[in-house]
Length: 343
Image 1: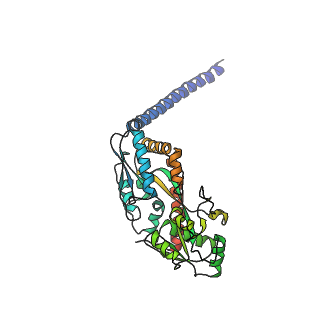
Image 2: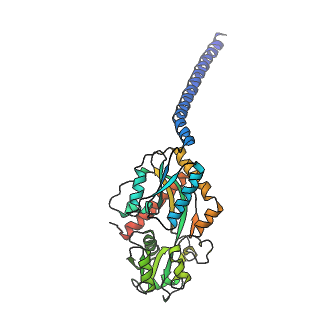
Image 3: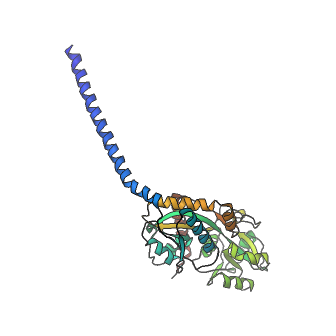
C-alpha cells in the first residue's frame, strides 16, 4: 500500500505546482495585454478625436497641372469628411525633395502629411546627399499610377516599338530620345528599356517637356519619353507618332498599344501617394488612408483622374511601404548601371 501512495502523493504535488505555474503564466500574460492596451489606448483615442484643427497637405510641385488638381480635390473632400479645414501648401523644388523633407521634419501628430511621386524612390540614388531618409517617412497610401509613353517624330522610319528597337539595333548610337530632364522618371524608363533589351540610343535632357516636344516636332531628335497626357494632344494632331504606352496594359479609353504587347513583362509607371512623418500614430495613418480611399471610390472623381491618363490604385500603408521599397531596389540598379547622377 505504501508503494502506491508515494507516487500518488508526488503526482499530486506536481499537479499543484503545474497549476500554480499555469496561473502565474496567465497572470503574466494578462499583465502584458493590459500594458499593451494601456499603451494603445491613447493612440486609439487620438485617432477617434483627430483631427482637431487645420490639417496641412504639402504638395512638392508648383500649383497647376493634374497632380495639383488631384491633391486639391482630395483635400476638399477630406475637409468635408473630417469637418476640419485641409489646406494645400506648395513647397516645390529639387525634384520634390524640399516638400518631402518638410513633411519628414514635421511633428508626427497627423496634422501634416504630403503628396509624393516617383522621385521618392529615385532621389536617394540620384543625389549625392539627401536631407531626409526613407525611415523618416511613414507610408500612407498610393493614390494613382501615371502612364508614360514613347513617341516618335512623324517621319521616323518605324511605326511600332518593335520596329524602333530593330532599327536601333541595326543603327547603334544613331537614335536620340528627349526627356524633361536628367534623372526624371521618363529618363530612367528609357535607360531601363535600353538595358533590358540590348540596344542603344542617346539621351538628351531638356528643362521640361515643352522644349523636348519642340525639338521632336522640329526633327532634331527622334523620340520623346514623357507622361502620356503630355504628348497626347500632339499625337492626336498628327505631330507625333505613338509607339507605345509604358504601363502593363493600355490606358483606359484609348487604343494605343502598351509596351507589354511587344515586350511581355516590361512595365514602367509613375505614381502619386501620401506620406506622413515617421512616428505618426498608426491609427491616424490608417484613418487618413481609409478616408482617402473613400474619396477615391467616388465614380465622378475616378473618371476625372482617368481623363488625365491615370488610374486609381488605393493601397494600405503596408502595401505602399512594400511597393516603395521594391521600387527603390529596382531603380538603384538602373541608376548605377547607367551612371546617372543629378547635382
